[in-house]
Image (tube, rainbow, N blue to C red; front, side, top):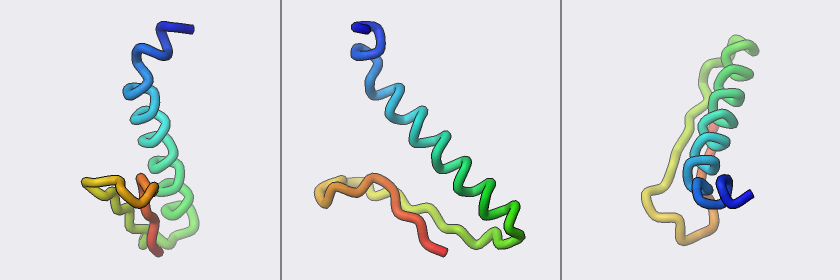
Length: 53
């Protein structure tokens, strides 16, 4: 378990990238391709990723 704890930042970014990839894939499969992904530099409002269509 400590192995995962030591690399928690890595796992967080990995899951974030996989999630964004899935959202973009779904947008592409709907023939929409207008999904915009925004990531704030500073996370002081509790949001890590914004999606806008």
